[in-house]
Image 1 (tube, rainbow, N blue to C red):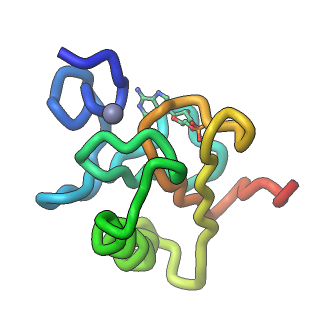
Image 2 (tube, helix red, strand yellow; image 1 turned 90 degrees about the vertical axis):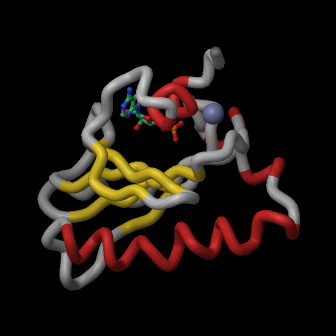
Length: 112
Ligand code: AMP
Ligand code: ZN
């Protein structure tokens, strides 16, 4: 049993609105959406933040990035989206399991 919220979502212990899953990653809707589309793409393995990744994780991180435009199009965003990674407390990260925010559509906040 882990106390990491997103590991618990991966394990199916906490429900989430999953929109995509494969062996390496899980993508689900943010519970507090900041735009019409707000997804979180996470590695299934626990990595706290970007500080923790090494060359060993290059394929995994690349895999997440490659999926983003497909996910955006599938969510009805044909002409672009914003991807954000908050890494560590200094980056405003609140959930300590690496995740990429995918945001777009109505209500997309300004970048500041
Ligand atoms: P960050 O500040 O980058 O760590 O972002 C964490 C994000 O996780 C926030 O946008 C939250 O709304 C979102 N979040 C927290 N708990 C859940 C949950 N149970 N299911 C989906 N999203 C969540
Ligand atoms: Zn975790």
